[in-house]
Length: 150
Image 1 (cartoon, helix red, strand yellow):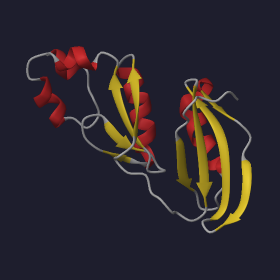
Image 2 (image 1 turned 180 degrees about the horizontal axis):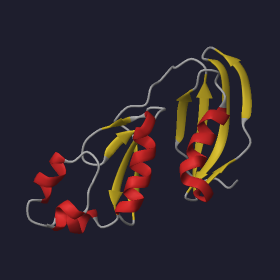
Image 3 (image 1 turned 120 degrees about the vertical axis):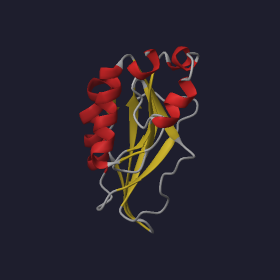
């Protein structure tokens, strides 16, 4: 799997430190836009069983690491934005991530691993130029495009 010059590395926690829990979860939603290399077992570490895996998400490279003991939880300081074509695509990602995760505000949500996502329409800049757009966004958890068009 080819590497970017700079590769974001994300540290996940799973009960047994197995990468398969993480790769299965993301491959279910991203389907052919998610490619996982082989899990690289690192064995027992101070954080329990540990594995690493090279990932491609929409052709962008990431390194995923899992440990059995949670060491560093994800937080709002890092999120991945998904620029969606339409409401159907927004709903697809939002519903999947929040099923076992949590909703936040303004298109932000958290998946079951605690990773933050901002699920937004590709034309968000255009929508935000409309009258009262900021007020609409501040009332939304999931972005609902039609509310900006009324």
